[in-house]
Image (cartoon, rainbow, N blue to C red; front, side, top):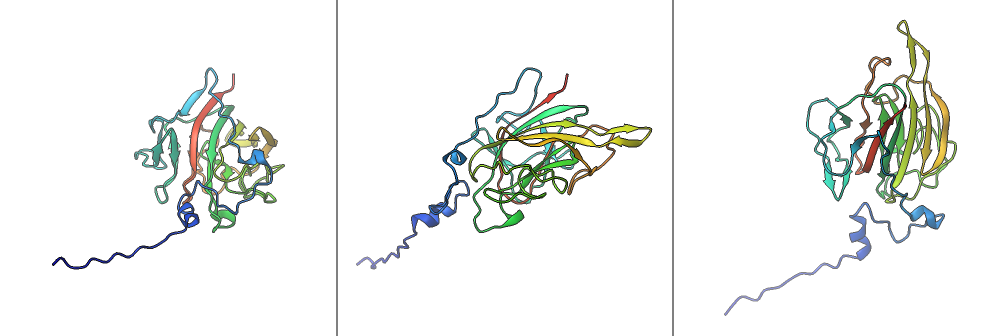
Length: 242
């Protein structure tokens, strides 16, 4: 006689399964406006643009050390930060005026708060950070989404809901240096989801928190930050000024 086999079944609520997917909003999430749940339209790179990420590979990127291969995840034309991997930077460096376009989305992490929800950042020349964070529905400060980190809060909170694609268009002017001394600070105009949140703002810090630092008179890379959250990116390009 075969031994009697017994099986134990555990019923897992569907809501609990959904919680395992950081890119699925919970049933209790309420958006302020229907458009906050709609992805921003993707913007194709214009002529003369330097395409930094087109969804195919990491050929334009290395780890923060400048040599090691990137091991972030890549799926469906989207790259996602991996906790503990570290920041990534472009192989190329950029000087002069330029416009940077970045499309990103942050995960839904309702258990976190403040800097613990969908935290990342994009650094121009590796020194000047525009913060990426789940700041949906909050009163924005100097460390919230869209802030020039530690320098200037966005004029308005233009965030879409977490899990929804968003965009930055950043017009950057590097600092002026004469005879080894800074005569004018770097400046930024930032559009978040098509809304101007910084208008020709002076960046008073020469190296915002966790930036690469270095000689501000020299070109620097674009840096995407690993802050321990699975933030995603697509369609990253840079357009030098004429």
